[in-house]
Length: 310
Image 1 (cartoon, rainbow, N blue to C red):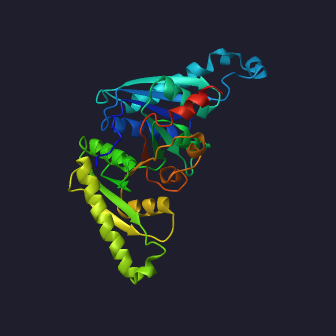
Image 2 (tube, rainbow, N blue to C red):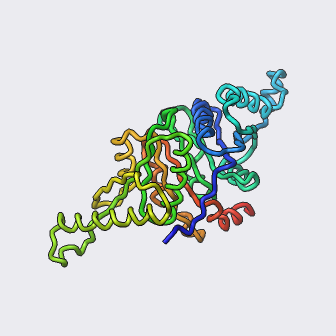
Image 3 (tube, rainbow, N blue to C red):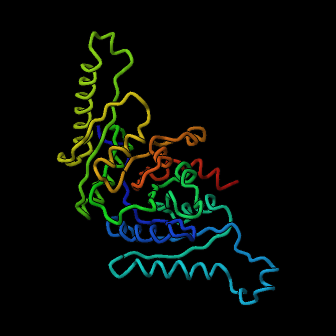
């Protein structure tokens, strides 16, 4: 049976900046991905908690009377001009806001009809940055987590799959990006042995082979039903625990992958939206590999509508 989720190309992106060294990497990475994705417009956004300067500071340094937001915008624009050139056929715009970063970004995504958010994941760089976990849980669009030491190249991407609709959406996005670059694309599937396997008279090893055989059949059916290329290989990983996010990163590192592309399961209620999926658990795993969390745009819209009314 074919996937019920309709794939829609990314047209509008938002890059969340925090005025640290991470901004350079984010802008460079967005420039690279703009050549692989059919992006038409990118908003570079910085949200400051308070743009106003203290009165006593202005009295001591009268030359600081210029609007702070204009100064920030100029600095960001200079970086954009450095990394975006004539080969980037995309419109760019700087937006400076004041207030709560997560709330402002979510509202901008709704107003600007954003398809993809680029955010940084820091390991050692200065500054706490924007809470990517909060954005990952609440945004209605896809999320690209760029690490501070991510490679400015894309030679191989990994797609973890469980054969559900959200995996099909992630695979479709990966294939579309690959068509503009030709990077190597592979899949991985994590499976386990049911706790009651001993009742079948089979050993653990025997039943693990049975489960692997079924997984291979499911992968073939998954690829054929969605019309995906048959030459994409899948690695099957047996596990007895639930740390799937760690397994995805460990395998990606063994493959020397430059990117993990994973689908995020849909949510239909406020209670379920607050429960992290495997995709969102990747936000918390310490790794240098960027992650693209692919969402079916708008499936969390009911929650966002409520959020915007607060």
